[in-house]
Image (cartoon, rainbow, N blue to C red; front, side, top):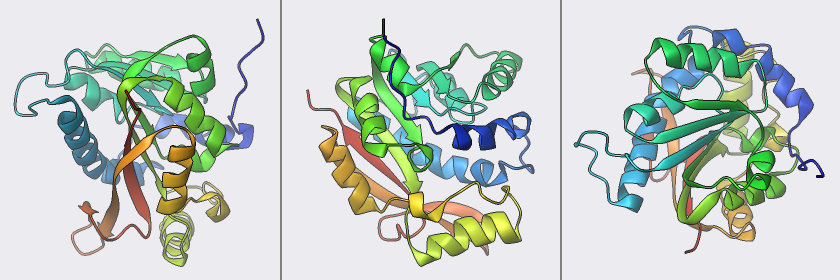
Length: 248
């Protein structure tokens, strides 16, 4: 059987492979993600609860839902999703991330199906999910349209995809590249390429072209005074997150 085509960019994978061991260090190279994670989780959990009629105050509110975290890294999102009751598969094209994620999940007493694979390979194998988390991945792939098409194929009809990325604005260049990479040195220089960033309107158009129905978008805004992130209906100038549904 012919191997699945892939949108994986080998150079992008190598960047994150080199940082794999630091995933769970809140003061290491992934410090920006640790800081952003509560904000991302607020959005993800609210969207899943609304789409599937779940009560977040109850025990295991996502029980019965099958969730894929594509580009799962060390498991920063996969683990809280598993704690909420979802059956979680974490997939990453960087092989070095998987053992890191597996060890941490085992230490945390969580059962998560981590795999070194791609969205395209999972789709070709016929895997389907209720929810696909596609977080901070699309700006690193070789072909965003092909990648989103594979993600759509992975969703059941009526399934939900949460997709986050970075807007292509002067402000995002200053924040994500000058600030995070050059000044704060949270990330190695070259982690991000400003030209690969995608505007919210471009992402909505790509989602629609892939056969998805965009239903929401919000900004994730960093406050340097409180040193924390929050969701915004208006400010999508740097980080932002979207929700889209596969038509039933």
